[in-house]
Image 1 (cartoon, rainbow, N blue to C red):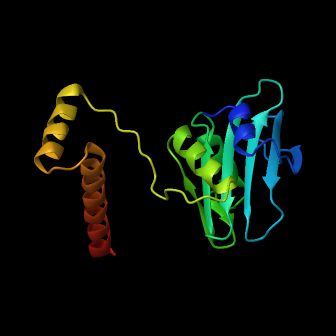
Image 2: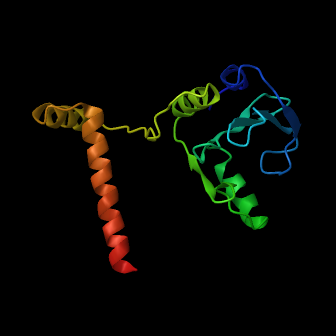
Amino acid sequence: MITLKQWMECVHYRITEGSNYGWQCYGNNAYDLSCWDHDHDGVSSNVVFDTKTQEVYEVTVCDYKRQRAYRLINPYYRSQYNQEASTRQVEANQAWDDVDYTDLETYQDFLDKATAIMNYEEYDQRISVPIDLPDHEMFTLFKMAHEQDITLNQLVERMLRAQLDCQESVSDLIS
């Protein structure tokens, strides 16, 4: 998970508000800091952290102009967050109105997107997905990518997209 310092650097130490976090899923010491540019077509970012340990529970970044919201929840607390959302009968994934959060898998992906968004720069909308494979499988993928004259990332992205398309086709047949 990212650190409070990394988030502060990302928002250039600009804090526009802060308050005790209103839910209990992160414990009694959870505090929320915000950085908003006060433009409804602008950007904002939030961090929820523990005031005693400085552990970061959740970070978000919103690009209101493009109607995109990204979030990274500390994996140790994701189930507690989802449980409290269910108890409160709210959509756990809703950022605002009809915009859902895109949950990110890696802290580096969050930092890259958040830094670009907070600097009003273009950013990659794709999601980084960590893949941990044994060496012999990685070697096979390297060979396949080489044979197709593409990068390993391009090969894996194609494979993942094909699998997702297959899953969507099966879902369409079922419904």
